[in-house]
Length: 270
Image (cartoon, one colour):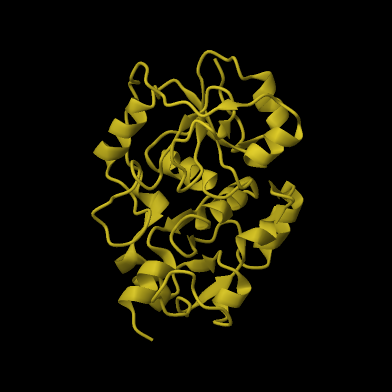
């Protein structure tokens, strides 16, 4: 039985432990749909962020699901309370960090991100297989919401006005500085007042998270380790990459703004 001690694992580690009794590998690639012509890490199960692990009634993308929804869909993937979860995505580290963060928010800590994701697995020459749908035994996973992990509009607005938190934006510096249009059609350019910029790509190198020392240096310029921090981005996905890097760097008073700029820019007019 595996107990994960770090929030990231290497492709080599995953390969060595791939047959562990309680290991579950999740493909958390966003917007991915089942296609038997695509490849996956053997025995991976598709974690469908958009369709199964988001509140589809929310007008904003990839909105945080309810406890009951998350629990039901996690059980459908065969996840148990004693599972050890490793999640990856096809880009390196992108949406996999969102999956990791959601599990933490629902009280499950035996979870880690595959550093470098599917590209790192392929680079090592490890075996792959055609995508398969998980259609086996349901799990007994019990979700317990830890509300301090996610922030929502009213709380972020208050934090921005009162300067109670350091708000760190994971978007590119050109988007943060309003030099590049937002990719979401009709969404205005802008920034949350009193926020600062740290593009999530600054934490990455060749699709991998940089070493701990480099992560510490990146965050040290913006916040002390005991500061209250809210991470934001475009729609709550890459903010979780900052949360992952900050966790490794030793920050623990951190949270993610679920709606991020898509919500803020829609609700607050310039």
